[in-house]
Length: 114
Image 1 (cartoon, rainbow, N blue to C red):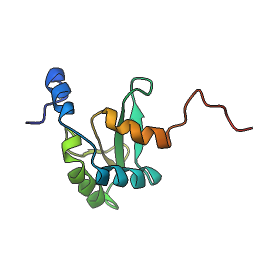
Image 2 (tube, rainbow, N blue to C red):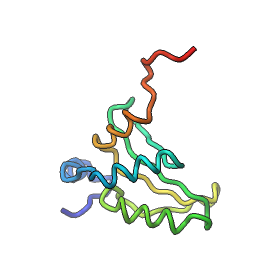
Image 3 (cartoon, one colour):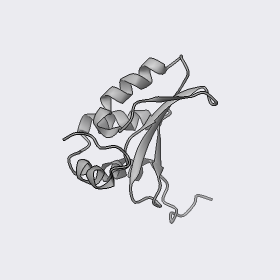
């Protein structure tokens, strides 16, 4: 199936159904989240996406390698933010990233340590 653009909502929903986070990508994601990747949500924690950012030239090749690993999950190539002097890309939001959120995101209803 051809990857849709972000504007093709119906095709994007169908495309998401074809994706499943492999054990290898899950394990890579855990390692990256222990480093400098982040999880983002736009719907109050129902579905998450991964975001990757690296400084201009120092880790650019690493970011492009990650983009290749997550190619099926990213709808656009890495982009350079001149203002922040940083390369970045993000995956699509997907329910499979919820497994990662269970490990790394504090439940807002959880009791805080005192």
